[in-house]
Image 1: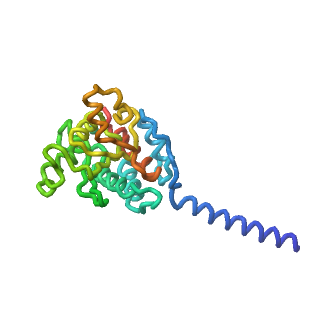
Image 2: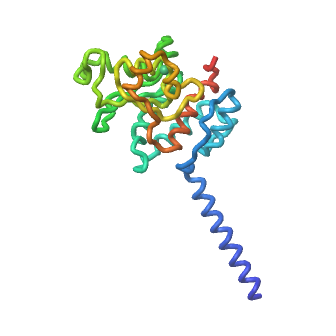
Image 3: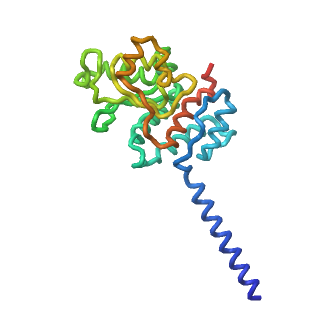
Length: 244
Ligand SMILES: [Zn+2]
């Protein structure tokens, strides 16, 4: 009888402990989760990664539900002091969220001053504006250059060296050159290994390579989970058939 009570107690404690442990694991994705940021080729690839990131997304979810779950996570994320660029990565992801509501490609960008103030943010508006050149960074720089309140940060065509442009994705060749022309340093949240230009600067003609080297672009120091989310937003075009 004594043994029976012991095993009953042991089993109860074990199951309660296991239940509490499971709840802890389900509460939030591991902040150090580093999903492979390799290029995504198909709709099935992006759905598999979305399910793997552990935000409660299922492959059978509607696009609206997928965007809603991504948005909820971004809205609840508290910047981690370990990652000084988390705040700015979030500014770009909030622009990705706006892009989802405007049926645009999910790439966001923000421009930040030397005190860490986000001066302006914007997102890709190619589809909503029917403009082939309106990438996230291009839309941001266009707005920045046409707003008189930002004239104090400009010296002719170039920008103050104290500014930094953040992008949710590694800048493409077109945006890399624009950022070099205005002479502003930049950081990206997720690398775009299939079309990002940062790792290919050495392939440019000398004139452009030297210009790019004066306006360096590097990976933002942000949490791996934010990088993964930026990566997934980039490829959501596969989900709404915008990739072709
Ligand atoms: Zn671009």
